[in-house]
Image 1 (cartoon, rainbow, N blue to C red):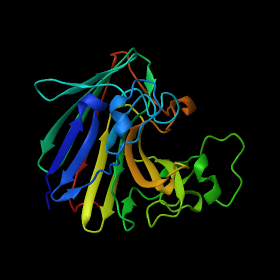
Image 2: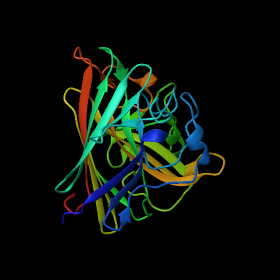
Image 3: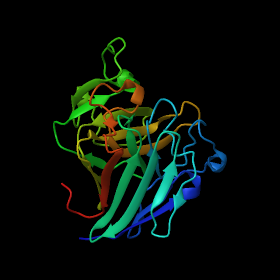
Length: 273
């Protein structure tokens, strides 16, 4: 069954997607964060929920990247643009028969390395499940160490396992709040979210760049003070959250043309497995 998707963005405040609605369902989780309206580049991230454009990194510096804290512009055709010190990012969205396509262009000097994530925080129940290719290589990051029942390798930025239960840690079922927060990067370009009868599929395409799907499963474990529940399902260019930890092949790279292009497709229907 085809379900139209409606997207609302806020160019003046970091280009954040503030709504992703299919029929009567709002997919994006949001929270009150008044300080978001007065941030400046370099500020610590202010989590208002929605979908953030995180580039050139997610973790590390600058916190959640250098786009969320800057105003974007929107032209007469609806194309939205943000200009940072080392790159320009544009996005153009258009409805399709079964969802929405968002086309991106990042312009920068050749060999500029970056990670980009569509940092989508979804409003999901404890019954929600995540579906990706079984056996896909999955990286877990140090916050997962207490849940693995083994010693974390000294100095390792991540450990690897296989989806859906890397190193025995099941990540495909959310469940109730349990006071944990885990980040993972799965080596797939498509993920489907099931929540009761509702379905959302996220698919990423880019030529010659590393593609992955980030997961932030926060079941009331973050932040340390006043924790809350939030679930990030994040199509990514790159295979790490922190650009500083990227090994060769783990980050996107601008070619000699000075441009990287990619497409994010979202559909809300019943065709995902």
